[in-house]
Length: 101
Image 1 (cartoon, helix red, strand yellow):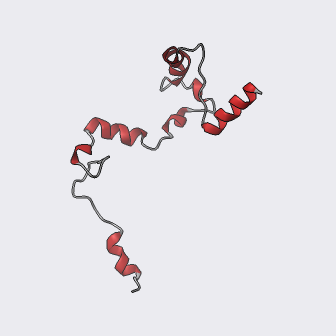
Image 2 (image 1 turned 180 degrees about the vertical axis):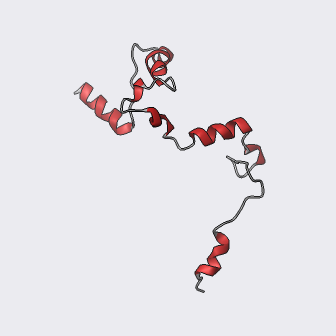
Image 3 (image 1 turned 90 degrees about the vertical axis):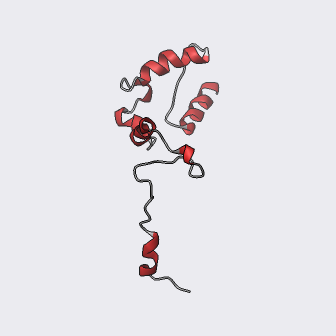
């Protein structure tokens, strides 16, 4: 059996009956987000929004208060003198290997 484009069209634009809701656990209706959680997901759900303000130095972003978190709250929480964050695991591994070697 061969499907043509016209036969496949019905699968392209399936709409959900509960418009405007985001269900993070599709097996349970208890997973439907609250209005506040939905706004937060829409605002930050892409995972890259922090770099909208980056300018290349991640730990110096003042709004949102990344700099304050990284240099004040995080070291205190971890019980260390200083904490560093990186843009990803490779950058972290690179820094550790060069610090140890």
